[in-house]
Length: 235
Image (cartoon, rainbow, N blue to C red; front, side):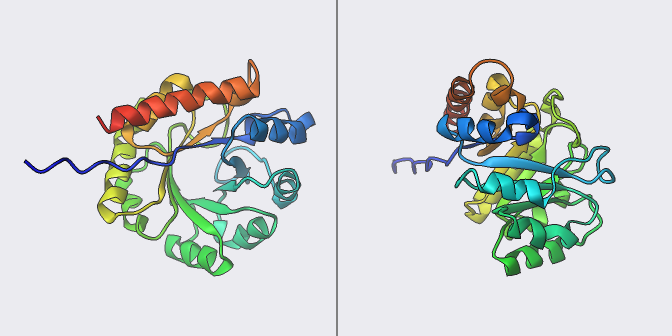
């Protein structure tokens, strides 16, 4: 019997969401999370139209860029992401993640982001079928499955999205892609295990990092959870 082919270790990354940080001391929150082991930062951009909230613009992204060398993951929860790719990339965004439910044509968004030299990700809401995301799997750096309705932090994780995470993982594996499967919403020590076991590799974590306890300790707990989940995924 031929020996089993080993499953390569997946890169697991924690991306604290700055929407959950203390805005009066945002620079300190960035410094603490970077020192505590964060792999990237996630910034939610909301326009008050695509979602019923307004948050960060390019100026804040630039301010965060000045405080850290870690990658900045820019989540464009806006109606027309195509119009705003350049200002957010110029401000320091490394990966620009747009929603398939937005008005901009997905193919045009991907092409425009590539022309800028930016990473690009495609996202879906919890109630959007994975089939809408699948055609872009070979052209993006990240497939983001929202595990809450976009717009506000602090919502509970919706376990019904786990099959979509598995589908995204299977699609990327079939392509031999190194793109991330990202999950955003309600990620804490317990749900991080479930998401990692389903195949997620990029974990947006907000309240579980910045609310209660020390940032470094919170990140260490999350790191242990995603590691355990990934171990379950390959056994």
